[in-house]
Amino acid sequence: MRRARGFSLVEVLVAMMILTLVITVSLAAFVERSRRLRQASEIILAYQALANEVEYRRRIDFDELETASPQFISDTALLAPLQPFGTTVAVAQTQTGIKNVLLTVRWNNGQREARLQLVRVDTGGDNLW
Amino acid sequence: MPVRTGRIACPPHGYTLIEVVVAMAVFGIFLMILGVLTVDMRRNEKRMPVNFMRHPQIDAVISRLRRDVLDAHGSNPYRETHDGYTQGSKTLILESVQENGGVQMIVWDFRNAGEVKRRAYNVGVATQWIARGVPEDFASTLVLQAVGIPGRPWGVRVTARDERGRIAIDQILQPRAHE
Image 1 (cartoon, each protein chain N blue to C red):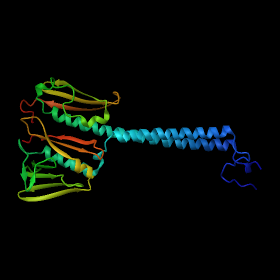
Image 2: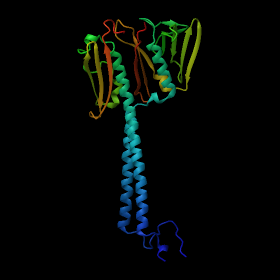
Image 3: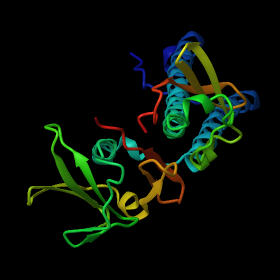
Image 4: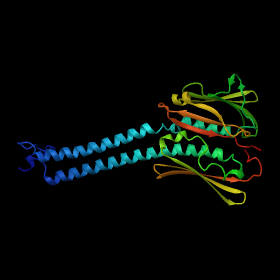
């Protein structure tokens, strides 16, 4: 009998196709998981740096916001794993007495970025610290 | 009646060279993909610090510490000593505003590996909250530093490193004004 000699070509091909499908899906899931974990870790670092910079920018006098450094003033050693990375600070006056301070960290050749915006109001005094 | 054994029968003369080469090629591609993925994962693991903030106890400690510092009272909320504690890189002593508007003295103690203590003093009565089971790297590498702009109340910079010395936590906490 033919069956006694093994499986037919179609059976083997179908089995290989299923196996290939399972392996491909598993590997894709593995790759995606690894990528997302890495991105999550990067975001955690980036937002710590952004939050730290906000603490400096919220204490700069309202009138000096535009003339302050367009890069981060705070220590960015935390971002070493993202090297090479860039930081920018953009200030825009939306209306009298209100300025938006947009902080950005870019890494992975500019393909990834994290932003945080601080809205500053001219309190006319000590910036409420 | 022939019975399927579940295995591909080996021909009496063995496999042909082409069959063996194809099988090895498929297996080789599979191994190569696995190898590339493993190398990539290891590289990321070496590059990125441990995410301490995923630890619930550390998250609780940092959240509570942040609230205390943001609610710090007055233009100089820090005290050099209190109840046998001394201000330092592992100990933070500050006056903080309570929800009812009262002021309490807070002491954060990071000196012991594996645990963090927060002592609150209200009118002479001390209450203690302890976060146990924090990773030893966190408490042993944690450093508290004063940071800020001269002329304003100082902030607190909290840094901690993982077991490979990579900076895992770097947070600047600045007191907010209370009126």
